[in-house]
Length: 258
Image 1 (cartoon, one colour):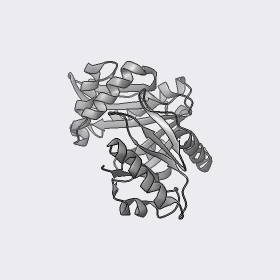
Image 2: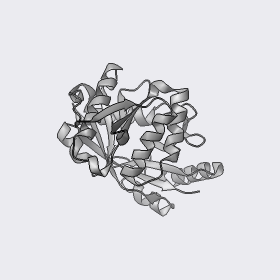
Image 3: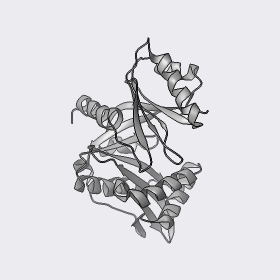
């Protein structure tokens, strides 16, 4: 895998020309910025930009004005290779708040299709309805310590309106959810996005996270998605590196509250 070529392909397919990531979202090109807009629970934010030192502050102000007119919080998803080099500092000056950076990691789907090996007593259950979503968000809240109600609303909408774009699975042990993960499939692209992967603390280090990567990789490959893409936290990045994922860049969410 040529990392530079894959990063350029990712920028083009998943950012500059990306379709909406849900049934009620829309993607707009506004000047030198590509953004996604939609009602709750849609993710609102800037996907891609082509800025220089002369236009950056003006374009930032325009996005603040636009989303402010809608009364919506939004995120500027900044990558380390975006220009100008001080775009992050400019966003902070404009009133954005930086959240923890994550590693953009990519691997070929076919290389991650190993056997799904689970601890004794653990089974994988596909999420296909609101009851499954409730199990998934319960373990998500336990693993990450954050409210998952918005994620639940988005998943329920996606399962109802565009089920082919979402694969979600829960690992169950003794009737309780212990790990959960999902995969976003955007038609017309070669990248399947791996999200979640949260494991209850007592079940970490037992190979469940790795098993869920293999489970999703097989489905991605069967559906024609060449690459797996992850925005990896400091906790998951070492695991993914051992599995053969390459680190292509760093992404930092900059959030603006209207």
